[in-house]
Image 1 (tube, rainbow, N blue to C red):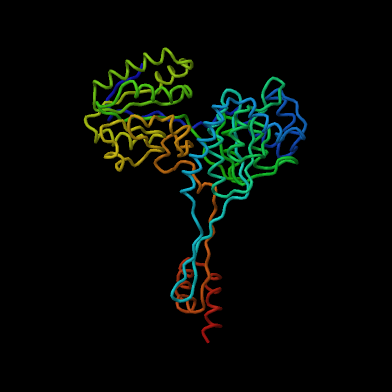
Image 2: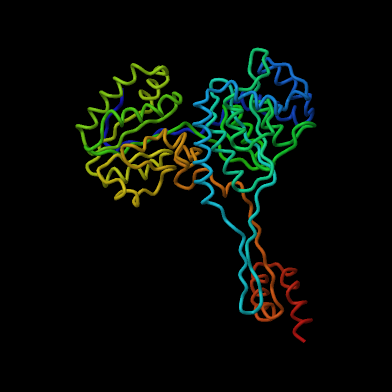
Amino acid sequence: MLRTMPASRFSLKREIEYGTPEQNETVRRILEEVRTDGDAALVRLTERFDGVRLTPAQFRVTDEEIEAAYDHADARFVEAIREAAANIRRFHEKQKRTSWMDIQPDGSLIGLTIRPLRRVGLYVPGGKAAYPSSVLMNAIPAQVAGVPEIVMTTPAATGGKAGVDPHILVAAAEAGVREIYRVGGAQAIAALAYGTETIRPVDKIVGPGNIYVALAKRYVFGAVAIDSIAGPSEIVVLADDTADPAYVAADLLSQAEHDEMASAILVTPSRKLAEAVCAEVERQLAALPRREIAARSIADRGAVLLADSLDECVDTVNRLAPEHLELMVADPFRLLGRIENAGAVFLGPYSSEPVGDYFAGPNHVLPTNGTARFSSPLNVDDFLKKSSVIAYSKEALLKNGEKVVTLAINEGLEAHAQAIRIRLEKEGK
């Protein structure tokens, strides 16, 4: 049952998952084992955790397996994933940036070069947590950025079978990813970060995973870049009395079914709507296949927050900084400019959150745990690196050199100052 309380008194319970001491020790051992033994460690760990015995030659998914995956995927799925990929690509194409150079009046040049990362690793969970949509959301921005090498790792099927979910393979193919390895867990993160005889190391690792994957990403950060350590999924629906209670309840449950730690919250100035949504949640919950998970999420982390006005609703939303925010109000565009903290904003009754999860085009890899206060959705910039360019002219150095010397001396860095003085003395003659 959804709790109802005043908006001003609510604080969303958030936890950063650091894992248990046992989990951390397990991950540290796995990382060191792969770093030391390479492919041999991957063979042992894949058999230990997935029950699949592979040789290093079997790690990589063949082109024939990728093509055969289309025969095992429903034609409607292929059509939908293909159109979703086109939408995602079109959205991210608008984010592309170019290098620039600015010539100064004194002949100097300053600028910024923008280049893609050379090689990016995409981790994709397997089994019950296999999400083809995440393949698209992680791979396509990297491809649009111009990353020449995108490699994917995903667990081999458990129970002695070495196959990979065909829907994952179809999504990868549609996103242009052909270098795929059937390796999962913390050992896959280690392989991507440090490299083995078969899997070359990458510059950045992106993609979701379980606690062992999350901890492994945390540990290898610095050796490689990572996207983020994602927390549980969140949705906040800001609604007034024009909202349809059935729509609101359905969207709250769409996030609650992710896992027991997910948060689903309604913020409204309408007590009538609040009561109707609570009733709808109970009605719809009874028919959900994942009702036990959703019910635990609703009971532990769901809430209806009653505010005195829409202004207080907006203030509450900005304080919560949710991953997903739906504005189901009479004029959502009027409120949009006042939303400061949200990973993604969905406007109106037909912009249900799953539209963004799967199909519309914006990325569904979003900041969680309140990090929307300072973070953004995964985007093309996440796969780019930038280098400053400085080409000072003689005229500029003679004009500004003494100022540079003054600043260097102020910081006690005499060699810095001398590097400028020696040029002023020689060129100023």
